[in-house]
Image (cartoon, helix red, strand yellow):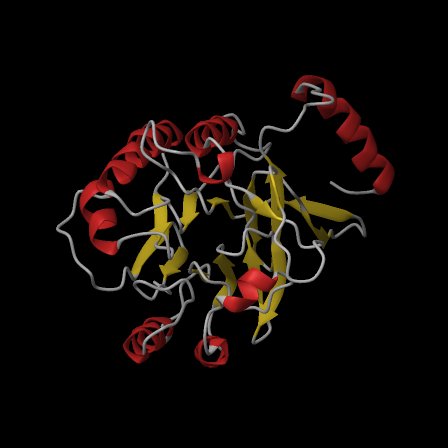
Length: 303
């Protein structure tokens, strides 16, 4: 586990692990079997591989394991029932193996009614897909930033009022807010044309609350920023990645799928982009690494 360091009584440093670990997958753009692949990418195969990788991460040395899978929107390419059924067939068994909840957000490629009915088995509804999931003492709040029929995002006054009332009572381990459209500017001209509108209004609601981190997707570019002083992490996609160094208004996409690991510590946090389907250059087993790490900790004076 990624460590945080605190002073020890003897003048050294004590390493403490995270209290909660989340894995974020975003912009899956899953299609029905046999349909054309979005951007030429077999997103179902990548999703399966990503979940296999997450399953293999196991608990850290302190026994702490994964707390939840967070899927932050554009779960499907067209919002069709058969796409959600295929998604459920892939994700549900993996979540059961991991023994963790799946936190879902809707994206602009999704359909609220089909998502509810064919992914969750609930009654279909076109109401915003806003909800809360508790992972131990951590609260995860999901806001539906989609505008049906549009690519940009927005939050209704009623959603902000609901969020305000919810955040009036802090959670023991704080809150992570999840929405599809990041409340940030973007280096991508395409993302700049389809932003979250009036993000300052969301920032005003978050000021002074227990929200520790905002998770988003949508831009197909892994990036970080702040909103009202709160860290915002835009996870990298499983589908095609937008090249943020493409010249001018041009659009260049890359096959560089990734997932994000989020570690929350008592007074800190860490977000890490993890490539999927990358070539493994070394794979040293834990039993070989542990004595090396012990030597390094001893030399550094950390316990």
